[in-house]
Image (cartoon, rainbow, N blue to C red):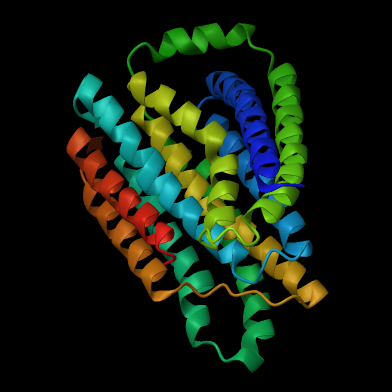
Amino acid sequence: MSKPVVFIAIAILLATIMGAALRVAHHAEMLAVKLGEPYGTMILTLSAVLVEVVILAIMMLSGGGPTLARDTVYSALMLDINGILGFAAIIGGLKHGEQPYNLDSGNSYVSMILVAVGVSMFVPEFVPQEKWQAYSAFTIVAMVLLYGLFLRLQTGKHSYFFDYAYEHQEEHEHGAESISTGKHAGLLVLSIGLIGVLSELMAAFLHAGLEGSGLPAIVPAILVALISASPEILTAMRAAVANRMQSVLNIALGASLATVVLTIPVIEGIALFTGQPIQMAMTPAQTAMVLLTLLVATINLHDGETNAIEGYTHVALFATFLFLAGIGL
């Protein structure tokens, strides 16, 4: 099959996946209205991570390369924190000015993300090859326990960390009575399943299209991250326009945390079971970008309000990520 035909097929599949993502975003928003925060956006982020895990597992078992999972998680962090949060803060800031959110949520998310990335992607650089399997097993257990504890806090005694009382919230809650949880949950699962199937097809075309094309090796990882994040992008931008920055934070930072602590254990588990080599330690450029991103996020999320200027700082980092990816770093 010729390269032009392959790229046309990839474009059609991407358009179809984005169409399915629109439905995922709609059903997730309905569940968010029905269930309230943080449950609604938590469902959205977990669904997106599930798609990412499925795609990565398929591509990994098909010979996707030892750095595919690392590059995908890195790309997802850049897309979620710098892309989604940055553009949402700009859009919302230009329309509404400073947008309030629960300060405790931002602090909790950033600290958990830093620990998760540090343990699973910074420290491996210093682990000897002969000790890799033992540390990989430790990482799997640590990530699962970390996210289990976080979910307990997020849905238990500290659930108020991830909620914010906006004006007219009672009107939304009143309208939620007519929303069918089962219907929207079922359709959301079906939409996610469709995205997974289409993504599997796209992975095959992508491998054929990129082979010998000279494009940077990180391109497949960026596309996987973009596909899994597409429902989150749509929902976050709508929330920013509606002046609901708490939902944006729950989506952007919640997705980042879930990507690290759920995707990495699955991929490392597959690697241990099949014996396939993987490289989870970040490159120096990736490490610098992640640390700079989390530092900027910590500074920006210190006062309980976002604005367009803070959004610009994250978008600048996102542009830097794209430039570095373009030159192969």
